[in-house]
Image (cartoon, rainbow, N blue to C red; front, side):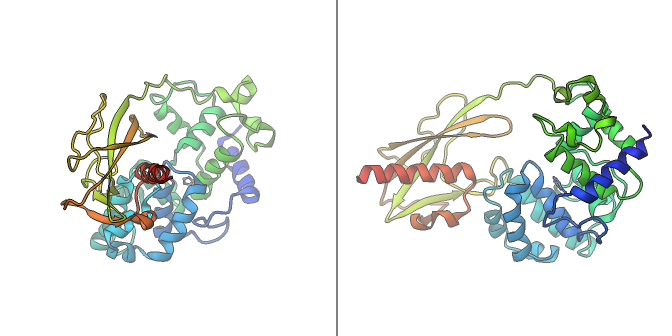
Length: 348
Ligand code: ADE
């Protein structure tokens, strides 16, 4: 099967079956403006389309242009990002918008090399934006594309070492024209038909070309090297109340959940850190724990509570009734819910 025929079939399928997404131009329409393509691609890294929709709508309403975002208050942007996770992306988002305005006159560079020079834009995002916003031929490989490609060619080199091979195979089927539609067609095929489990090969436009399918077990691809177990860490978060307010701090700018509002919490370590780094001495009451999975470790965060009349420094008293407006990242939002539920139980 000539490789051009693969792109042709896929694009024909995409013309009829593409997902309609707020950041996506339909086939034949002019491309979405680069700012919106960039914003959506950064949001979509590590996050599902369903989760991104509301955030994308909020960001594009609140900050309609890259200049608006560059001028935005950093705290407000971080709060608006709360819940999407991987907060380094939000810090880079602001840095990138500011770099586009300061160094590029408010206009995104229109090729991969230029895009890659901006904060938070790596190989994948540069390729995706160059293809989708600027129609450049670029090899766009995310997890969906990796799966589709490895099945199409029955590439049995285990990931991650097999990545360069998969990229070369994707390169071989990427067309000169409509590279943005092609990339998004691969993504759509991967998320709707060529799924991780139970791929719907009967509906697939590339079924006749798919080596994994003819070999009988497409689900066996991509082959993955065995995963290392995630280490388990433990931590303690301190819920401190005074006059229906809770003490919130801002996490250091760098590191996990950097720059986000949070409950004070001690170190996250292999052993239970108990009350290390408690903001004040108190008789702590136990409010249970929450489990949260980060990329490189799992965390069991125990929540302890106390009331105080003491003055504290380096933080703010936040009204508990408005805790949802604090922009807490998911881990601490869940910890807050636990603490509030524990307090209600005590009152009963
Ligand atoms: N995932 C990442 N980018 C995407 C896009 N442009 N369309 C659909 N899914 C995506």
